[in-house]
Length: 433
Image (cartoon, rainbow, N blue to C red; front, side, top):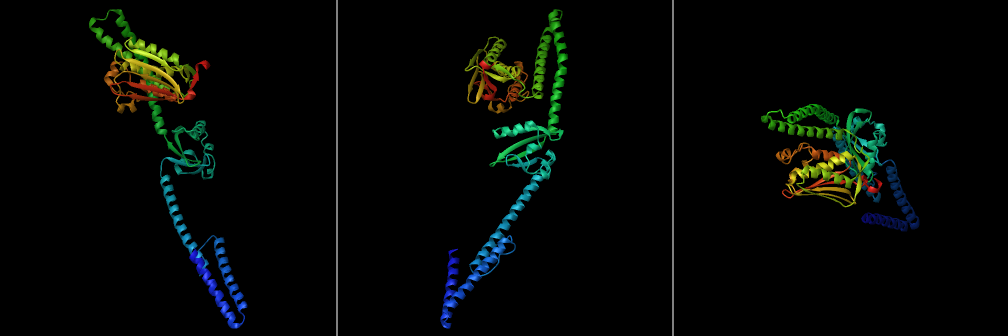
């Protein structure tokens, strides 16, 4: 820019000197100087006017090309304009590729701005949510009116995560899974998936398990009744005693398995957070400890430590089932005479119930799968102790219904510690119970 200014100043000096010399030659040097400088100024203003008109017309076409400083400025603008057009074409091409790729996806993608207003969506999202082009700029909650989704969006602002499953707007037969990811200052991306088939298959599985388990209860009850009658009558041959005992044990095990399956089916199909009872933790722990001592036959040292007695808001039966499953598992897998510790404490993160045993421990590779149905670390030992393989699965579902979670700390040969973590909003004082 400095070189251009020097060049323009040099032209100005040359014109002024030329006019002055011409003026001295004609004895009208002042008039010649004024006329020369006036023509130079008019030429500068004319160039500026052309440049202004080009800018006012939206910079259409090439910039006006003239010599001098305005010509150089016009050339610079023209080069910038061409570079801008090339970058704009690249951005348009990239945008078209993104739109084409997202348009080919089966999952719906919705871009939100301004706190939840529709900015853009692909065809799959439009079909799944019933969106039209005229809906741009409106809040997404105007079209997904499910109260659970509105609550989900609010919880997301508070830091909650995870997908939400709900019926499609205007079509309850279609089940959608929505997951919101926030980015930037006030923007979000919504992924919409059609999970109708998976939902129907899962529902069929639940119904099948529940129906089969329910139908098995009657024949098991009849079989158990006849076995008890035969054993109590004293008329059965001596050779039948061992088979009858095994039949009774397996019938009892089958009955326990059916009851656990029915409990799991109920936990899966009923509403979450349905329980509103205030369960006193200290009383629940003492009750579970008494049951464990009776089950153990006084062969284990079971201690209870409750740092601060509180209450948990939820379903008393479900909480008892979760606590009891952990404690009875500790009894089953701990050697005779081994200590088992039940502990409850409260801190800033909520309430925590831990069961520490002195059993065989668990290899870390098994821990992620412990809550799967019928998954056994040691199948033979579990069956010998009367386990069904559903205890920790029941615990997992109870915790889901109480917004809680479980952690496992175990070392092979050194025992295990199972800890249930309840959020602060589930806790209360015993004085309010």
